[in-house]
Length: 205
Image 1 (cartoon, rainbow, N blue to C red):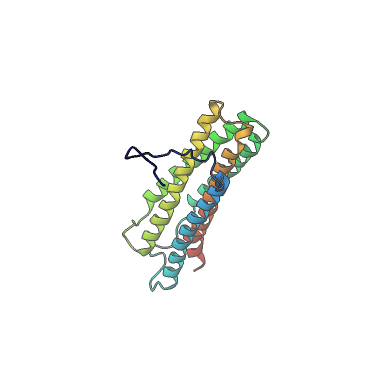
Image 2: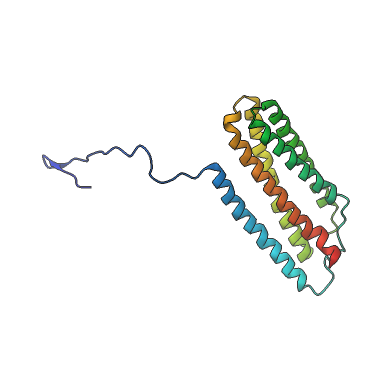
């Protein structure tokens, strides 16, 4: 910017910034879809690596025998139920049913926490660790990565529950709930892929 000279001293002319940027602003819905795309790609790479290693494994896979479904199958149903409950809440707030939304948010938190608890119990019962063999490394890395996403989702839903109790979430803010529900559905879909990978595919190998 040219600076005029006044009595030998440069003077900087201030210009007002534009009131609004001409660039389009990404919405929350667009942002969550980009997040789902990137995180989904990471899970896809990990699961692809698992199956690649399984196809070229020379010994038994898994080394300790097929995993039990006694905890994993009911836990899968718990997570799927939580997704259904949250979807009911997301639809309820579009009709300004705040009490229904609050109960659905709390129900989702309880079911999600139950899923985490059962998963921790199952981890503790595994006869192998993350460094025992390649299968163990894949199992704990992928299920642990998924667990981290569950915890993030629970935190987000917990914040929505607090906002709802304080009257900060209504029909006008239904998009916030829809975004959280979309992320939670993504977590459920990923778990179905993880469940199929580690619990079902060894049964048909």
